[in-house]
Length: 89
Image 1 (tube, rainbow, N blue to C red):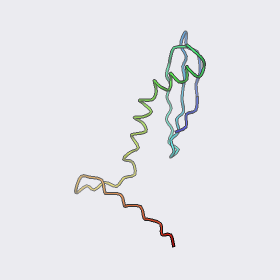
Image 2: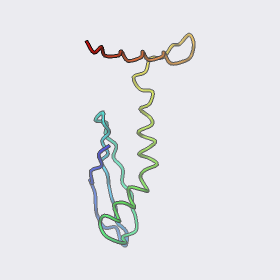
Image 3: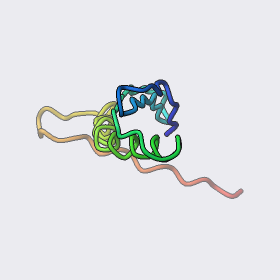
Image 4: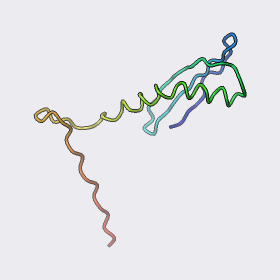
């Protein structure tokens, strides 16, 4: 995933850090966190990322069933076909 900083602004004695998170399929998630304004910019951003990570992980997990085929008769996912082996001829 790619994390882009979209916001980095003071709010009293804290800092608002916003991320634009883009996954490998191009899906985008926007999130802001307000964290203590302590340390370097990198340390502040790392603290905001750590605070954001549970929500980012939940967003990413939401894609686990998208695009899968559902069998309504068995109430289960249709097994995905095994990848074909490449022949070395």
